[in-house]
Length: 277
Image (tube, rainbow, N blue to C red):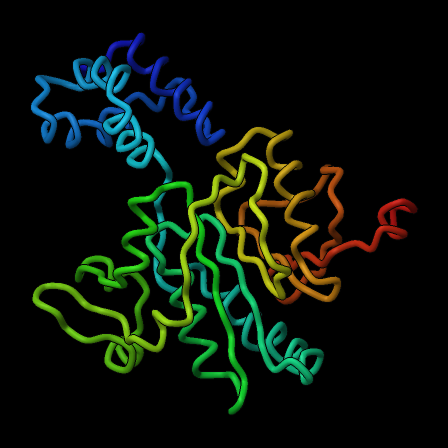
């Protein structure tokens, strides 16, 4: 381990200040592993030297923050939420949105876009004729958003959860990469967004996927994000968190609605929130 305690403390404070993501003691190895390639690319002798550089170089500092943003993802991750999406949420919304014939979904903390494009595939395969849908994919990492917009993935990424039938249907081989179909890319738009900061003006969503990101925040930040997200979800809309995330013992305006093994969250009405219903 070549990362000094002072360097780790600086980087942890920087990431927490900019994104509210917490790197506790014991994660020094992870910080070093993610910054070492950047240090080499910048021509620095080691990660400590690179940390000194990011203290004066805003461009490198942004690269470091992007590298230290958690970007773990896969296609149709955990599967069960996607099953609930097609079997329960979509039928309910198709009935409720018959006049508009349009759905709006938010993939928050979208990483490199596998979640957003997994949803796009399911929508293309499930929506009746004459319906449309849009997916907003947001992330704190501009590097990840560039990858979402490009819609290109390497073979190792494709091996993580992509069924062969959908690979053939929705992707084209481009060199050593796979490029997603234009009609899916047209459905997904990207926007830079830091969940821990005040949200910019956003539309109302029918479904929000906020999965596997709250675990990286402290309790007060989690509650604040969940309260602000409530204001962006339609009264009959849905919120899905990660399988290890819960609103138990949290003062937030959502009620849990278990569907099979998935804890779906539904918005509380103002009256219900006041009465604790």
